[in-house]
Image 1 (spheres, helix red, strand yellow):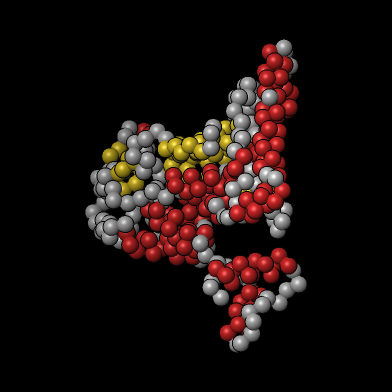
Image 2 (spheres, rainbow, N blue to C red):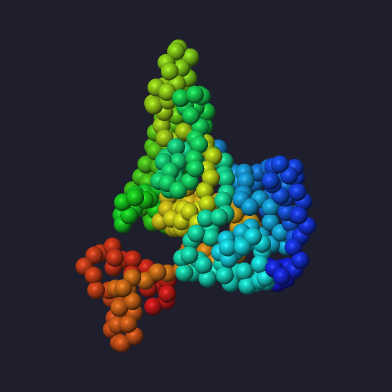
Length: 331
């Protein structure tokens, strides 16, 4: 971001334009030209999977001083002022990084974004766990559910992780271990993946019965309950930047389910040009950082003093997580 001077707070105040005196409203023109953070577009959209998308519909602030980004509103809130203040842009960057580094969160709540999102219901049910947004979802009570389903390819079908009860990691087809196993067992993994895809196709076939029964008079609110969670839904999702960063921290993490991670990464791509200073600091201090527990700090001290660097814990998960951190730190 270029280093640029912002008009001093000691400069003469701008002219005040008054409306009807009876309304007691004054309009204060901007000290500098304002630009649309979305460049005049009605939406910025990224397509995801076959039927999904995430679209940025609006932002607050939508207008920002020329030469700045929406990051300025965070600085403005932090300084509790009505203008950009007397700081340079590079000093604003330092303040934003300080706020994130020390977890001063309220200034980031002053920036909001509204998205229009289409995703399978199984992703929506994970997404709604983040209870800090305003959400309005497509209703299967009022409207017919669209004939759209999420179906991975055979190569995308994942096996259940042995170390993580929530997730799947290795695929049945394509990985080196899968190739070795298949050569020994006669394509067992490929058959399993193909069977799963066929199972999803059979679930999608329920849609024909769904539409037939609604046409026969069954209420939409009841007819929909037989549809699988692979069917697509849509919603509008509005959230402040602080809680969006919390969402991204969890859903861009390598342990998040691949399908929702695709949406989180697309959301990041939409926001990064609008609040680049914040997103850079968030990557530095959150997404790509390593947090150490008290036990891990003690293990590091032990390593410094000639120990083996092992963690003093009888919890296997905690030990495994420490080994991953040690590897990432090159220890």
